[in-house]
Image 1 (cartoon, rainbow, N blue to C red):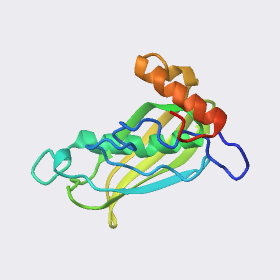
Image 2 (image 1 turned 30 degrees about the vertical axis):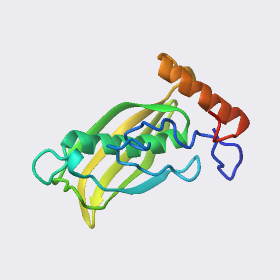
Image 3 (image 1 turned 135 degrees about the vertical axis):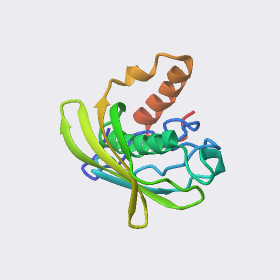
Length: 169
């Protein structure tokens, strides 16, 4: 949700500290959050390491797909909170090296009803290593409340959204 035309965010600054993509998860990729809501483009830097390796020196393809899902999903969620991945197609173009700073970016291509179509890519210099296209679906907040962990996080989110207190625990 956006409070003003300036796009000030009421989306939880970190939806879950354990998130592999944007949380403090020790095995995660720690993508930064967008600065404000309603943006149509997103980019961040990341570096995979030995924990993400498949073949020697190369990142596991499933983790590349997960990183692209996260970059597209972060943009979708900050474009219209909350969203989930409806579908994601990934094209792997080149091997992705570990221990290399990479750029990951995404952009909104289209929106129709509850669906937001987003494209993303993982880049090393001028080389596109992988790219993705996906559909992300705006869902009711209650979608996330089916587990005890989800209900606890939901209460924290609700407090943040209603009070504006990012420290609400």
